[in-house]
Image (cartoon, rainbow, N blue to C red; front, side):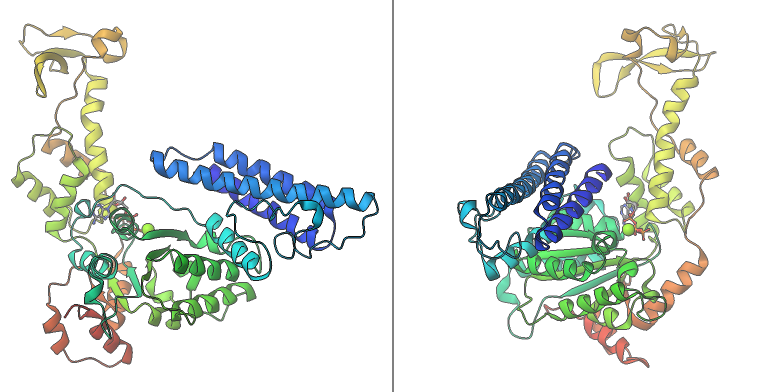
Length: 487
Ligand SMILES: Nc1ncnc2c1ncn2[C@@H]1O[C@H](COP(=O)(O)OP(=O)(O)OP(=O)(O)O)[C@@H](O)[C@H]1O
Ligand SMILES: [Mg+2]
């Protein structure tokens, strides 16, 4: 993934350099840059990670489109160079993708795969779309709603914003509009990015996952154009969800320490989120941060629904133990799980997933260090016998001495690790610590009190509505925000 992203990034820079050289009528330099760009896009398409077949094919198709584009532009340069040499007087188009195609290019619209007509506005629109397309990775991860433990309110809000308006458009008429901006904030590792993956998996909208690094790309002065093109494309492909992870690094408070380019990005972001004159039904901006207090106040206001993704409660922790163990065989009763959930107080979802992984490895470690094994029935297939580690003193007649590493292949293939036990978890707890500090929690709590709601808040919407609205105007926005658009 990293390799592909890097290659795409480089290919885009080369393409850009080619465009600049083209505009300066330096066709030789443009030709070079376009060729390198085409090569890099080609290489990137060979480096698409092993996503699901459909996604992989889509990505490769999109990259092939970019290869065609770069090669088409290189072709154009070559023809222009030839013309120049032959003393042709044709005046070339001022930009490689805009303007009218030169006669010698045979009407080729710059090799664009879209097949759209070239010229003026269309060309410009095309370029915007190309830019956004290549800056954005669209992927459908495999996380189901049911795999996200707890966070009922966040799931509800996301469904209200993404699923209901699509399935029941008749419910969202007049003033009852779906959420346009949802901000998820909370301590690290509580599932903000994870729940966004569930949205991407479960919703039928076009999902744009953008990291701030995508937008604040190396192209100084281009970043705000990227933001604009991102929104333009998302509007074209409606219904869509734009997910911006770690939004604080993109939209931190303006002013001190800002350079020109990042404040232009923020301004563009503000304009786009405001709607930029278009109908924004069917476009949801979803963002996540663990530093909500550092967000620019104007940006904060544009996320109408701000929801805290807190540390999991006991119930959610118990569910997480189940989710992260998956189908691995274990001897845990529901009582044991309750005990573990109790002991994991203060742990984040991510801490629990690490702890469970550690416990999952315990039977493997035992098998690795075992000096004796015995035959047991395979619980999944009672007709098959498997080898399981046992105590050297075990009286079982099938007991054999030896280490796993020294076994011949056919014997090694029979090894079945023991089921995970409560003791494995107890041991894992000895080396685990919760990663979220009290200070983090206090800051998040302060933000929730002032501006947000908690995903685990049991208070009903109606009760919330009756609550005095507190000192700041923004708190009122939130209290209104809690009311379901269906109510
Ligand atoms: N509610 C949850 N249910 C199930 N698993 C969870 C949950 N929350 C977190 N996890 C586990 O923890 C991992 C890390 O979570 P995630 O990346 O979403 O954290 P985050 O809130 O985005 O943190 P950060 O603020 O540091 O980006 C997930 O991949 C998942 O395995
Ligand atoms: Mg995250």
